[in-house]
Image (cartoon, rainbow, N blue to C red; front, side):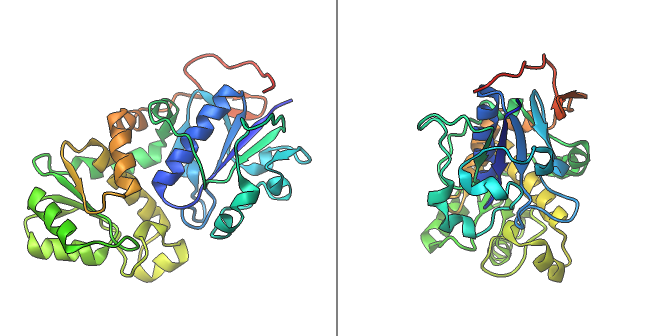
Amino acid sequence: MNRYLVSKGWEGFSDRLQCLSQCVNMALRYNRILYVDWEDRIWSHGDGSFYRYFNLVDLPYLTSAEQIPRGLEVFPPFWTRGLGLPADEWIHKLKNQLVFDPQEGKHFEPVWVHPGVGFRAYDFGQLPKHLRLTAETTVQIKPMLEKVPNDLPVVHLRGTDRPMSEEQWEAVRQAAPTACVISDDAALARRWLNESPNSVLLSDTLVEGNVASHKTDAKSLQRYGLSKHQMNIRLLADFMILAVAKEAHTLIEQSVFFKMARLFGACGGVEALLQESPPERYIQGAQFRSWGTIPSPSSV
């Protein structure tokens, strides 16, 4: 019998990568078919969710919750009647029902679900071996990467929901008086360019207000003349630019986006993302992109 692992997505891109990293490792370790569910309102839109932007390689995977047979036992049991239920704010209120730690005790349920919040054991040394951009995404992002001036440091201006002091601002301004700017805060980006007119603003999908731009849903983005697809592409490009920058500074030291981008880059993640995906193969109804051999089915 096939066994499955569902990786839910919620919150920011770096949180998603951390959770996905854990799920990729667990899918390989326990020989489970992976389904990545980023159908939530923060990331998804119309015809675009995880699989519009990414391919998986060297592990079997599904592209829809509907491909998981119904009636199978699920861990945690909360998801038994709703494997396709997208994560949302309610997920924080139900953390106690969603705790995912199959190594705590013995869980042989055919379906496991990581909720996308809470503890995650990520390994960015392994994730790049299995994660690729789709051809469509690569075509759109490569020109954005090529336009980045090599002679300027990159500055990440995280604002919105994170408080910033004038001391922090001045410290970054002194470290990089002229820079390439990545930001999710339109007001901070304007202030930087006013003080440093020779700087280059890379982020071009900024919205006004006190909510991180990339967390704005598709419907709300319409009032700014932006699509969720544009936002996702820009977010990926900004993450990759931060990852490979020779010199990078951040306004908010606690920014997970900045920390994970730098770690991902140090692990060779960007080079791996841009590699061409190998041809598709199939295993028992699951897509399997592989350069190696197909693993034989086994129980946990």
